[in-house]
Amino acid sequence: MDGNKTENVIDMKEARPHNRRLAKKRVQCFNEALCFVSTSVLADSLVLRNPLLRQAPKRYQQFMKKINKSISKEYLPVKIYLDDIEQIVALFDENQLKYTIETEQYKYDSLSELIDSAQEKKIKSLEIKTYQPYITIEFHKMWAKVYVSSDETFTTGIFHKIDAIINKSKRLMPFIYSYYFVWIMNIVLTIEGTLNKNGKLFPEYIDTTISTVWLLWLARILYVRMVTHSSIQLIKKEHITNFFQRKRDDLILAVLSALVGVVFGVVATILTTKYLN
Image (cartoon, rainbow, N blue to C red; front, side, top):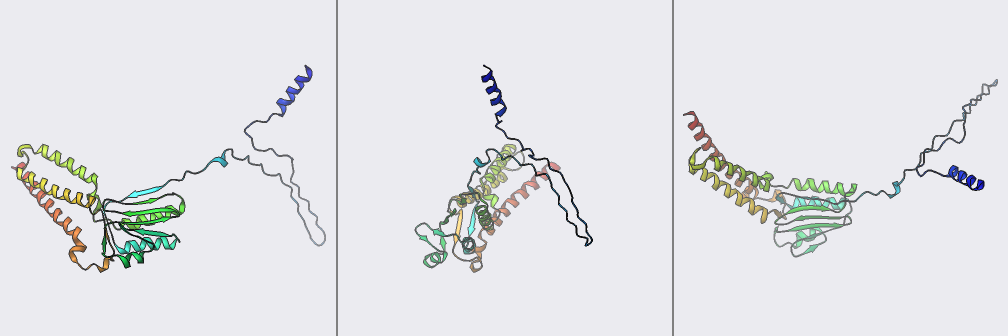
């Protein structure tokens, strides 16, 4: 019995906790300076210092790994020219990334192949891909988006540079082509129609004009989003000589803005006159 108790006591003393603390100093050292000064004024100094405490290793650190996530972004309607494609390709060449270019029917290994073989300067779709790392840039008639398979520093930098190039290619006032804008305008027009029921605020023909202008612009939004979301032309911006082609979006937006301005001006005049009288 005594022998067993002794063994138990020894086991308890020899047990080690699972969580290690900072290792204690094994030797209590002291600082001592020993100087020898002779007639030649030669001095030597020796200092013994205590060793620093050893840091216990962090448990489970070797099992922690960062989760690799993809990055993607969709864009409102864009107008892509040869200048923009050249910038993207130059970015890949600069970082020594092998890429391919795909259209609706063909696949190319370089931009020069695409330019030489393209029968038309305006194409309906364009995809630029790299595989190590995996990056896709898609311009289609119903969308424009970028996908990067990794969020590592290198690929994230590539993504942000591509994003900057595409952001410069957005159509004028891109927000008005968004579905958020459509919902906001529908809500505004619904409230306006409710308040102006039976022509209480202004004549019904004004209400009809507002609705007509909005329907025209809504048709324009749907056409762009579903047919020409990505307008791709294999010519440089500076080589576009047709004035209407260069300024088409600006002219359409200017006409619609003028109509909206006239309608709201008439409405404001009628309301002001009515309440002042």
